[in-house]
Length: 197
Length: 197
Image 1: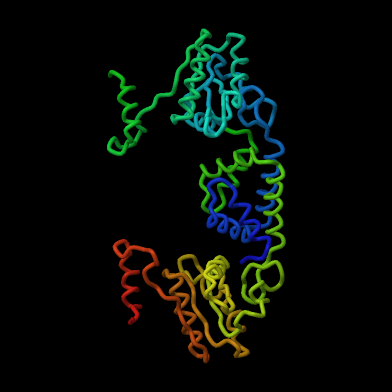
Image 2: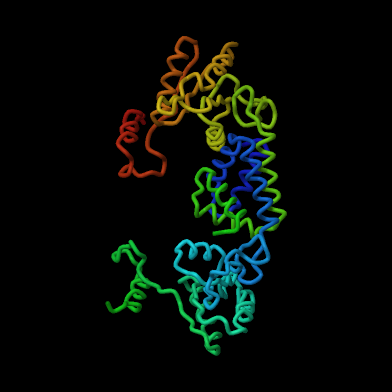
């Protein structure tokens, strides 16, 4: 349909997450009509990101150095660790500007179906970080779905033995949402977690 | 939020058509976790496509050589030219396997709002192709919107002087669509274009 290399680019772009064949085609044609300079820049960035970006040795967040910007920041509260599944979750929480502690990225959640057990996650690394007694509270911020809940339950049992406060993010109605359209489980959680005013 | 280069990649990906900030982030993280080999390949393809792919000297379709695969194909019917706005439209029509003639890519449509007049389109090139009298029919396959219609009208007037059949793609209800949800204009067109059985 296209001469070889354009089709190859369409195929390769189509393998990226969230890019279907139509989007891949649209992007490929956009590339053809974009100034050479901008395309080189994107091409270069892809290569560089893959080569230069590593994961923080302490928390597992993305980083260009051995430790990430958050772990290096002396203003962050070192007595508080927020445990998340993925580095993307770190970014989402940072955007709220509500949390001033450190993070720990597990690298996934326990999922028997996907064959991911506790051994595949960075749980050992989390336990090592708690050894020196500096951490006072762990906030379990895994996703509010089956795998995330299972992981939070597993971790809370593991942490029970230590003298650390363990909390879980609140589940409930999304702000700006409509009660009428909330699913039963979310609505049930909203009732469970109701607060006296 | 991220160390510099990851954010740079997110920003750069976000400039591609149809990629919002969330998708850009998802793709950037996917890249971080993709084998180096595959990332190099994508990086290389982007650069190569931009460098190697040109536009066909005859029809304006994308091509790695001076002329595209369709113009070079001796089995195509040279008496028939389908005029489209964009090279993407060539691909869409080729997928139907219904058309065995040649194409002519205008490179857009007449749009006073976007400041695109007939002079910006490859209309002169189309007229030159008709000079030798080999072409018997022109199918105007510009988009069924305001700009596409204006372009088709402009071209049909221009072509009236020549002894060539000029046709326009049928407008009507999309196959598999639902009459109830069709907009008034499309439904009106479907009535206009009704065929006796």
